[in-house]
Amino acid sequence: MGLEYYLILSALLFTTGVIGVLIRRNAIIIFMCIELMLNAANLAFVAISRHLGETTGQVFVFFVMTVAAAEVAIGLAIIVSVFKHRQTVNVDEVNSLKG
Image (cartoon, rainbow, N blue to C red):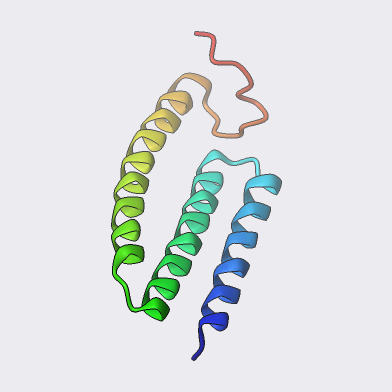
């Protein structure tokens, strides 16, 4: 398979993630869509890295996955905290962070 197939798949995954972030109102689903967008970027990094015969894209993927794991841990902690106080994870209903 050529590079263009991987890039097309990456673009489709990224577009699906963007549409999910724009349409959905559940905070957990939004985080899943953001992770889908990060994985699409990772796929593009790995595909281009493999095509060029270098390892820099794979190193970028390692760092992106590390940052994404930290983002998920902090994001889910915030969502759990908001749910404890507001009893909802709908982003339309949680419009202010006042205590």
